Length: 297
Length: 275
Ligand SMILES: Nc1ncnc2c1ncn2[C@@H]1O[C@H](COP(=O)(O)OP(=O)(O)O)[C@@H](O)[C@H]1O
Ligand SMILES: [Mg+2]
Image (cartoon, rainbow over all chains, first blue to last red; front, side, top):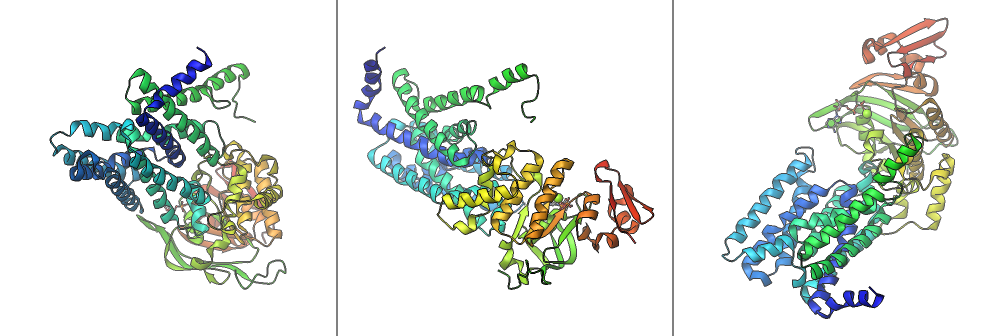
């Protein structure tokens, strides 16, 4: 296959404007969720991310009830996501309830509420499928504008408050002793995750959202020593997975959300096995060759 | 900042006053009860007590991490709620996520966060200052290591460096000697010696009775409440030790030396000068 053929293969789908928009949307989502997802990974909040993604369903469903598939789904989801993020943040402030328990309760309850609302509409199944699994080729110009605006907002917030969010994540005790507004920063992070999820809704959908948050960041974690490097590398991996996944879905005819997540997962598995220094394969080979524990000085 | 600095000049002053403090958690509201003591500027105090005695709780209350419902803490004469940015805290080993993607330099830079102010990223000058501090604790060669890839003693020194970057004048160290060998212990003590020269007041929780007796000005023996507080030779009496540690510590008096043995072989040590 010549270089020309490859270019032809890459350019051909872009003649359709809906594919071009879908590509832009999914690359954007790949970048933004990787940046926010780096916090999700280092703070061990994968379950929270998954739960939050599901809990936006009632908001989306209510908006759907009002306006059908073209209703204010984005805003409904945003309201529900932010409300749930704040709710879980508030529930877990003291030591009354363990965090994963609170998340489990809120997550299942809100998801059920969402399904209940949608199921009152007679012909709901196709639209429910889109909400659950994404519909990246249905992204319109207005949708894309909203995604750019909110995705940009999230990235700007992370860049401007990077060192504060880092300290709050790494060592809340230090954050307290520096008298940072620890609770406000923690809630802000939850809200940023919520906004990211809602902005990503159309590409991978509710069910696979957690993969966009966690998988590229977890991959990047295997290569770097510093959080902001992790974010940058995760963003590249997220964007790459999104683009490759979308092309795959065009040529192989599989669901785009699933294709994107599968590419990201494949990259993670490769990195897990072969990452320099930390890859499992090198660890096995090295142990055999050296015959001693590599961690010992 | 406190009006009485009195550090380098050696003028008498009080760094920390704790009065009738009770503090704790949901479910263990009085993990420490009615704790009172005073620490002079530049003094070095070892906080001793069995596991669960409330050493960490006391430190967390002083640093403002957990609220105290009764009593009063003042730092250089100000209530701790208004002045606790002057207190540095080196948490217990288990409270840090050592796999977190931060380097030695990143951790020390966290101490400068207040100086940097909101919305700003550190510049060249700030990194140079961090490197200077790392040189003081002998960690400059490791500045780009991820923090998990350090020995126990090195990890402790990074967190002490962070407190230096915070420019604190009271430093609380929660069990810095647990799980480190004698050489690392000595490295940590060397850094504390530098802090003493800077006039920094140090409170340090430890199980190492021998070290506490020889290297510290005062001992605070804690078991929920204060069992004893004072210089080592006054505090280390058989009664106090029995009350705090049960039968696990024994004293042998021999001439003018006191030999103290505990059932952990690590903590045997000698106290000089018992009269
Ligand atoms: N986060 C917490 N929630 C509830 N109780 C706690 C918590 N941390 C410690 N405690 C309790 O407070 C008491 C004092 O604990 P701590 O200050 O950690 O002791 P030490 O540091 O001396 O080992 C213990 O009885 C412990 O069970
Ligand atoms: Mg403790």
